[in-house]
Image 1 (cartoon, rainbow, N blue to C red):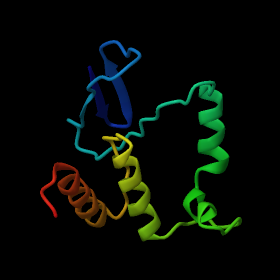
Image 2: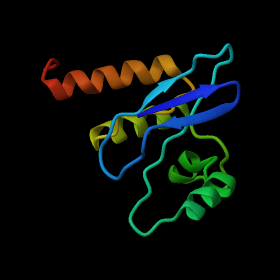
Image 3: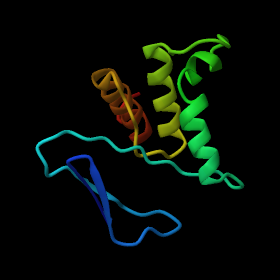
Length: 117
């Protein structure tokens, strides 16, 4: 399966099925693109995802840290959330401070492999 991101147009090549799978993301055009991939929890619908993306997603880390009106979480909270997701089996991460996330996830992977005592 392949997801092509070209000039603000996304095309899924292949059939999306339930269960684990590999999706190759290609950006052959001149513009950079990004794609968010989500796994819906049992009982959740695409409408739940749309509502969350529109209303509740921004500031969710700030709210998790106790600031009910927070709009932006800290870099530490973002890195911590990525490492916690890695620990639970996630393999795709969205990061704005890429270097800090890459370093933290590399350290978490080394610990998991037993390369760090």
